[in-house]
Length: 449
Image (cartoon, rainbow, N blue to C red; front, side):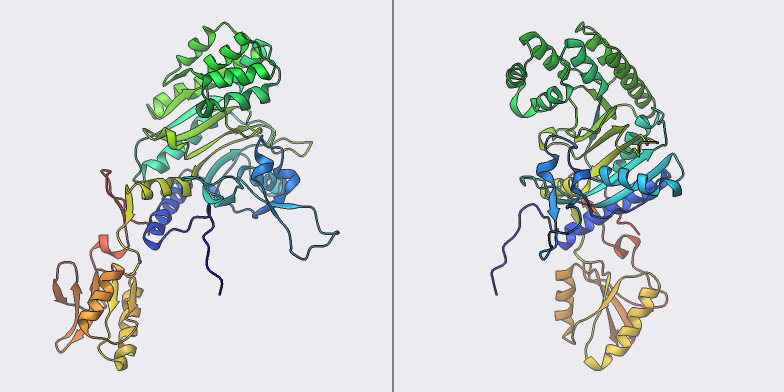
């Protein structure tokens, strides 16, 4: 047998860490549904043609899919989706006749990106997306609602302080055009690298692309503007650049910031260097960061897209935002901030002193399970001490066994042992299911039902 070699970029959580991830997924799902979003799931593959041309690196990120025995007459090339927005747009076009607009959907699925793996950045990972899409026109108030939904989900989870940085793509577009830089996409891609290469390198690259020194430095100054209120608009106007698209973007982002200040003070920060690398964004764009850990990069993001879903007759504009669940959980678990209280859902081990007692043990287990208590029967008959050690290694808090006086249950943590009836005995609520423990945060969140 050949040696097993790990593949980088494809995370496989151990059972205790998977408990943390499952709790996050369940809480996010429940929160999305509280806000009226319906669940969908799309296929894993899309035509490569549809996935391509969504940004500078989209082609590089796509994993191609083909049968090993595929012939020349095989169907059009397929690729694994690298996000959930592009397949969602296709889904809307395909099923528009059966959807009611505005359509509120959430989608929690795996996505695949062929990029270089690094801390928290995977080739295969789980995203949790929430989007609102409409037919014809989409009111701007949804650009405020979406980050509030994400904030509600994260506040139900044991995560550190976070901030959602927001921009509007019309602001840099109008600003660059007002400067006389008409290749907006190229300028955006260069300025988007400011955190990686620094402002001076950005100026150099902009000048290499045809900008003057003044144009390049004004573009960098725009990216340096941020505020937690609407004052960013005055800072932009002070740069002396004018364009109708710029005015429209400033007005729209000001509306978002004003509404957020009323409903969730401090949640949103206007940050004009946020651009998002995908070309389909046309309005608000979001990046989600853990406060104090910005160097780790964003753990979620999204934005508005006006033309991604169109059949030539009807356009379906939308706005969405996602949580990078695998990325977020990995960060918190690897830093020791979160852990599962045990590696198994089992709350009770039914002990076996002799193999002939297995039938009765299985009946006891069935009775307890019927009352919602996770139970397993010991794998083999053994001395009681050995079965206690087996339960302890698994993190199972209770052991059930038979005595001359009838069944009893032992809490192996405290040593307390009491008579018990499978039809009535119940462990403490906190022990029925494993929990996520916050080792450095103030809250401990119960695992979902």
